[in-house]
Image (cartoon, rainbow, N blue to C red; front, side):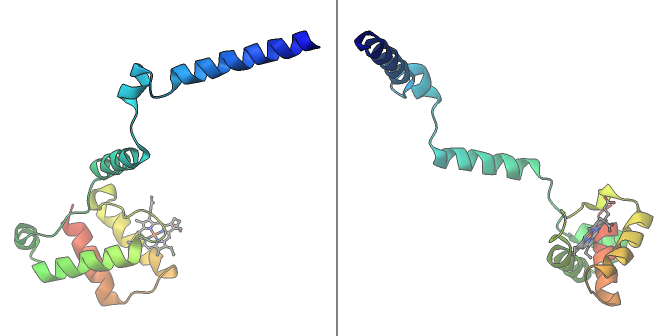
Length: 129
Ligand code: HEC
């Protein structure tokens, strides 16, 4: 019995030593250890870098499409406010013009917006194609 205890202690000590060797004092671990705080920042930067942004209306787009810049901006705001709560904010290029028009109509079953708001959102989305 005393013998078995001895063995358990030895195994325990072996693991302790192993653990100690793997603590940040070990040079390999020390050089590759980052604090949780930095880890979160790195994840955030990666996330922001990977998600393509919804375009911001410019004078150039306004002139190209003949839609007033103010309307495009309103359309973007409405779209961001109304459409991102259930699914991601789809990008203009993700769907065809027809699909956008159909889906916008279909979304009426899910949220309410009036005809003018619909035209502003569609104007913004289709101008971004
Ligand atoms: C209440 C939740 C909700 C809101 C708010 C909402 N949607 Fe949706 N949307 C859905 C669901 C659920 C689906 C998928 C199933 C379906 O089509 O019914 C969907 C599907 C879509 C699709 C098709 C996606 C695909 O891959 O085919 C588009 C485009 C879309 N929505 C655009 C919009 C726009 C634009 C708005 C704002 C006017 C909006 N959604 C607001 C719930 C919502």
